[in-house]
Amino acid sequence: MQNTTCTSNSVKKHLLKPAPSNLRKQRQPPDYLTLFLFNSFLHIIVLGNNQPKFFINGIPNMRPNKDSIYLQKRKQYYFLKLLFFMFISFSTYAQTTSDDNNAKELFLKKQKLISRSFNNYFNSNIETLYGANENIFIPKIDSLRSTFLKPLDSLKKSHPNIGAAFYEEQYKDLNYTFDKFILDYVPVHKRITAQTVTLSKSTQTRLKKIDINDPAMLKYDAFRKYLTSVLQQGIDAELQHNRKAYQKSDNQKLDAGMFLLPKLFKNPVIQNRMRYELLAYHIDNYGVKDIAAQLNIFKQKNTDNKLLATIDSAYNEGISDRKNHLIEVYKKVENYTLDAHIFTPKDNRKVHPTIVFFHGGGWSEGKPDWFFYTCEEYAAKGWVAVAIEYRLRDRHGSLPPQAIADGKSAIRYLRKHWQRLQIDTNHIVASGNSAGANLALAIAVIDTLDDKKEDLNISSIPNAIMLNSVATDFTKGDFWQQYYADKAFLERISPLHQIKKGLPPILLISGNRDNNVPLAPTIAFAEKMKAIGNDCELHVLDGAGHFLWYDRRFTNQAGTYRSDFLKRLGY
Image (cartoon, rainbow, N blue to C red; front, side):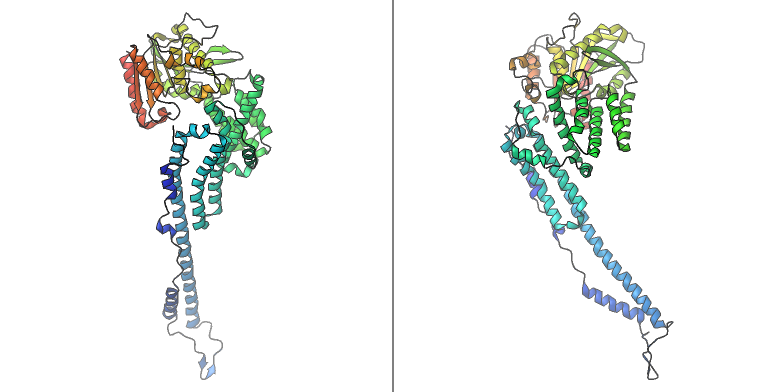
């Protein structure tokens, strides 16, 4: 069981450590004795003996000559005196500004350390935090919030001259961030526990006080993320109640968002920004396929040219990336198609080893584009490389069994058209990250979930498999439990529980700091495979998290494991 305390020792250490003594010093007042002595010195040096003669021949001289040396010296004296006091004032201001800047810089450095410690604690304990009842969760979140606010309160008290804008930004970002944690409680709690709950009236009232129609707050990143969470939860509710209305769409979440957005947000500036956020996120995480209509809606209603330029650039880049390779429809489902993105080598060989990539994204999001660059690299080495589009929860309203069925269909399509695509059907490798790894493993191990129209005479089993951060036991994990209460069914489609002799060689690469997928079932899978004589390599990267393919520390190491595995198999 994970530690359930609100703050780790490392967080407390950073928060409770007092500021250095030099930052606690009060500003020193000017040295008035020095000022007096300097003034006297200046008076003597500049004026000297050139004092005015107030009596000439016993007669008072009330108006000294304007051109007299005294008046000239007097002007020099006042000019130099003015320069001196300007220098003193500037020095005092510079010292004050320097102290404030140093304090601000030190605070921001500390905040980075605190945030790093907090993220480690939060990610390691997310199931414990969000799996708890609301009356336990809310006080813990507020306690964590206070660990960030206290140092900020202290800084503001000791250095108020840093500026109102700085403090407003810090307070807003912190509070919106922790308010979002509370807002996310219901969906995350369901994902972890499979239980649907409703926030208490007091918490609902608390969240309703947050103004989601204030465009002045859009400059804060945490506010935009809060609004995104409001929109995403609204979309989920819309799809849950009206899924049939979007059944013909292959971008269901995007369509629901476009419909719902003006109902959630009343301010036109907020609407425009959230329409941009919705489209930008979709392009980044789902791709550009079949979104021309939604893009036109944004263009017609957009009021910010910079946002439009950003969307246009991302969309055009996505369209361009789809032009430099072959795209074939390998499957038609209801009213939409599923594509295989095929990259072929430029040589004269009739057949080539083939690698098939399945992207990750938690069965809900993702796009084949994430593997385009890798496919190009393999094609340059003489491989046929394929990135597969498969059904997703957010785009198609599907569940993982349908995605696994798509994976089986994709392998069969490549085998069926091997001659035209120049594929060596004895050397087909399936590979994937995260959910894509789960899919690639399932199509090799699970002998069910085939679509009814499939030609079962064509094998859907790859000849070898290479996986990053794979989950082997679907009975454990928050995604599946949201939709399937039948544990027996989950066992029937879990690779860990369906191991048999004769499975293809498998390479598993995992990290021992993966907070998304437990390592123990992966180790158990490898041990069971070896115990019955199957070929299975497992490499656990020390210090690697779930997204190890993005971590440059392990790029060479993981690449060596993959190349050595393929060489050993004769690829």
